Image (cartoon, rainbow, N blue to C red; front, side):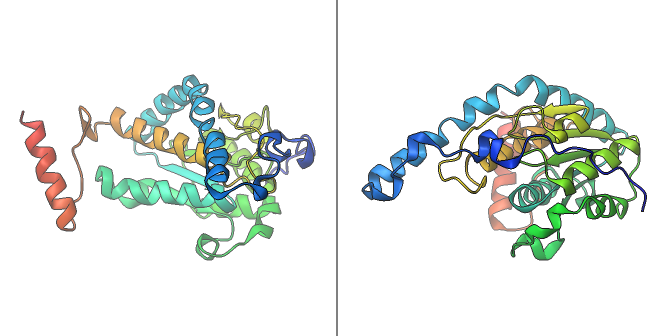
Length: 257
């Protein structure tokens, strides 16, 4: 399969802010449990302000994605590891929440379905796999492809976004590193800079939380713009169990007030 391999992944991994040792959590393992949890929570509290600084970019993405969605395009999230799992999670929650067809929002993770519950980190190093996985979806110009990577340099995701842009798709990047290869490959870059993690060696905490928050804003914003809510009410909840039937009844009642 033909495609473009990213020429540079930018700074080395150990130069990224997300990979640094956090001076505010040094000695974490020696703290009493309550003090440890408070220290971790203080770091978590910095995530929302980081996301708030990206709202202009998020709004740009929502407007562009909404126009394509109205024309029948899909939203496709792609990523590896935690980033891929969060994309799949958001995609899977939208149909029952907003009453859209399952295929309208799609989550793609490096390594496929097995990677949802079992680590398949090696696949993220393959640009070819990223292009291949998107090619299976037969992209169309009205599709929107959202690449998710805390480092912004995951070869699988960067190559996929470059390839999607060549197919004429709208491309959006979510990364927690400045001016990353992923951001440069996208038309709209969303960069919540969450800094050093509480525990160095994994971006599943602050960067992952920021990704989840951005994905919530993207999908909810698009659904509001395309008319899947009434005011602030979920107007198309699928009543598939007792809880959801009761919820739908309350929403209908609130809408009549």
